[in-house]
Image 1: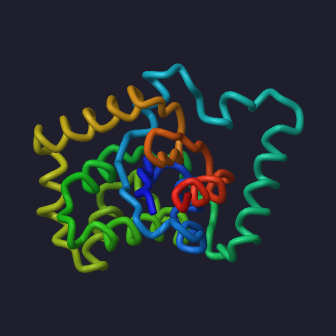
Image 2: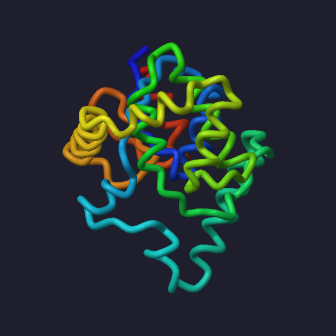
Image 3: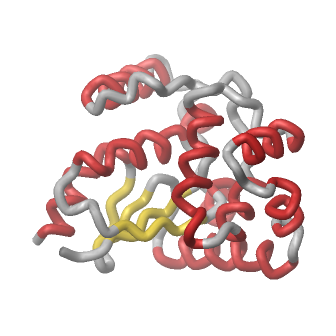
Length: 196
């Protein structure tokens, strides 16, 4: 089975949904999560969030929400809640993902995703971020200090630039080899390609 590169940012509710649904797909066991900053991707590619790009298109956003609900229902993701603080600036959270050690990476991802997309936490607030991380057993002060390290900042910037160079224009994006799949709706196609 071919490994899967998953370009990811906590800011995207569709990244949450894709991450949670992935285990149900055969062939999706070997996943390399690659942090990149969605705002940076949008800036570099001239793309916009759907709420901005389609805000004036009659019925488009309502249909987007219907499609999201269908995905939630299909994959049993009833714990998902649209965060009332959305959109959330995830710069510090994404630097934290770059900074956290490999042993704690999955715990960090699950902690932040649950806070944002299940528990409706305002992760724009540094005090809330520290509280959430501390409650999950992280040394929040040390980890947040690492997010200010110039090397961590540069690594996230480099990962974002590399994502754009590879063709990423929005999230979630998956690569199987050099074949790109955009959006949570492509999980089945991505898994088939990984199994082939």
